[in-house]
Length: 117
Length: 111
Image 1 (cartoon, chains in turn red, cyan):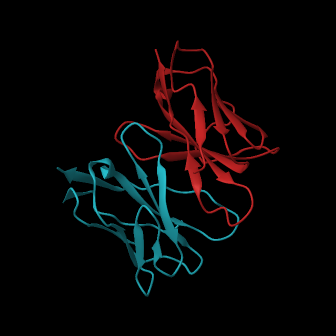
Image 2: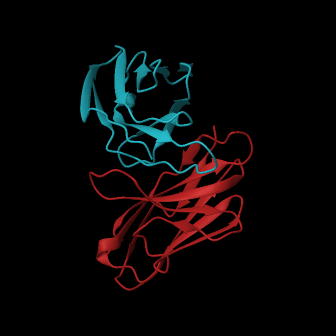
Image 3: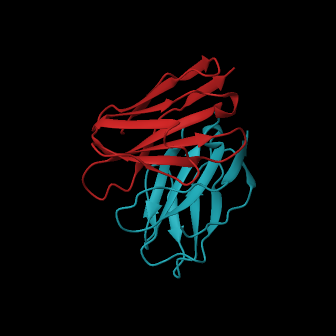
């Protein structure tokens, strides 16, 4: 099956610093990648949709200047949390939709746990 | 996006079938019905999806009501590794592929 990886799997940073999370589709090309955030005991919340080579589309309430998304290739998208604060501590998950075909299935990464001190 | 309603939790015994219900009375004609599951501290995993007809794959079966206002995910023989939160999601037709996750059903499998 299709595999999506995320790096790092967990990160601890100081308040005010920036953190970059990578999402890679390992064995397929991803036209579209999605970034989600999940707080403890809550469901996934979609943050943004990114298409290769174009600007990301952010969901309402998500600050695009704080959560920078780059999707420079068909296999890599990055999410940078700028000037992180403790309230940004969360589980960040990406997913990728394969190019071509109906592309109904999204393949999810294992998630990145961010702790901001 | 049309809304889905699922029970908060369900319990089953190992090696017995599990039927996870989902109501989606406001489904539109072009909405796909998707099921994903999420094990603790992991990203979600695709289970199955369908539009109108029942679907089978190696993981599960999806039974879709004739009026499409409800569906049931069937795990034929539950194992301990099937313990997870199961999400029933409607994906609108067209080129917008984003998924809106609800609260899902927490499935507990007893040994």
